[in-house]
View 1: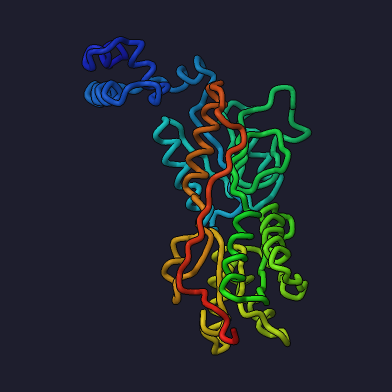
View 2 (view 1 turned 135 degrees about the vertical axis):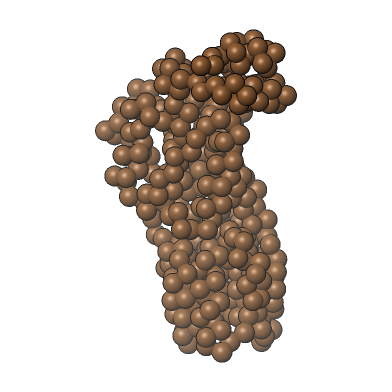
Length: 334
């Protein structure tokens, strides 16, 4: 049976280098890592993972808590996280929590049970709140929907500024009655995007009409229903701003089902820039946020916490862009 010394001989490196490559491949030069991996394969060496974990006190597992795995935006975040974890020699354990606190706490307990090394939370809820011990906070990064004023490192978007920029785009086209289909009431994203919408209206001296703000939940059905409610108003809006792209796609279907055209009759915009947005008919104007970068950066920060490395920033704000496509135009009555 092969052993680590045989691998070191075949790779032409020290036993310590082989051990470091197997435990922390990100700390080894790519050329050396390739030689060691090739030698491991040639020798048929299989390390005793339990022994490695016992010595290092690490499992190589990262837990990621996802509130809705079917959501296309979160799927992109997971993809970025998976790529970063794999490149660093870690495994990603995915938990579709559906926003249920008891499920999030259950998976967070894997860290205390030494079955995972850290947690990435994509929702504004702290799974390590009481009754968990607080003397030594386990490694955790909060990304996407962050806890305001929380104690964890965070990765977020300036949702308020992004929503303001999109509303300003519609105002610049000449729209004055702009409907907003918002997300769940409990979501900080909803609060910030509503605030950005209101900021732009106030700056343009446009009265914010409560009838033009419709509750939704980031689903296709919410967009369908919200658009129906907006279009049935006596003085219906000339533009609809949906707080995510899935609701905008649902709204697009509703608009067309009523014999109206986008953007000739109603301008329509979304938020996220999911892959489907560019393939709508017409292609959807939206806020592009770097979903994969959320996942990659969260993993990088979490590994730094696990390995007790200093963080360059504890609170990272990622950039956004306006993806201007053909779903917006000046209102017909301008």
